[in-house]
Length: 151
Image (cartoon, rainbow, N blue to C red; front, side, top):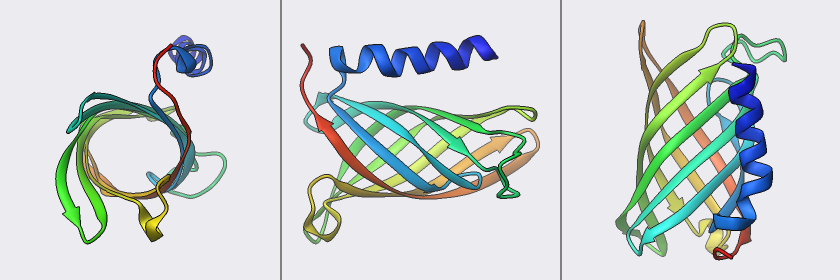
C-alpha cells in the first residue's frame, strides 16, 4: 500500500512535465473534504484521459479519516455546451485508500469556463462502491495552473 502511494507521488512530481497536457488543483466534497491534483491528456478534440490524487478527511470530516487518499483514473468525453460552458462527461475508477480501502466506479459531469474563466471548472458526480453497495456524491471546483504540451 505504501509503495503504491509513493509510486503515485513520484509519478506526479517527476512525470508531469514530460507528458501532462493539463494539470489542475481540485478540491471540494469527495468522501469528505478533499484537495489534490488532477492531470489530463488529450487523445482527440473530444476525448481525454485523466488521473488524480487527493487527500480526504473521509466521511466523518476529521483529519484521522479511515481513507485519507483518493486515487482516480479514467476518461472524459465532450457532451456539448450549456450556455457558454463546454460540458464533458467523465467515467473511471476511484479508490479510497487507507484503513478501510474500497474500489469503485466514478461518474461525473464537468462544466468548463465557470464565470467565463478558462482555467476554472466544476465537477459533479457520484462515486459508487459495490462492497457494500454505497456511494459518495462529489462536488469539486478545479483550477488549471499548467497548460503545456508534451516535451
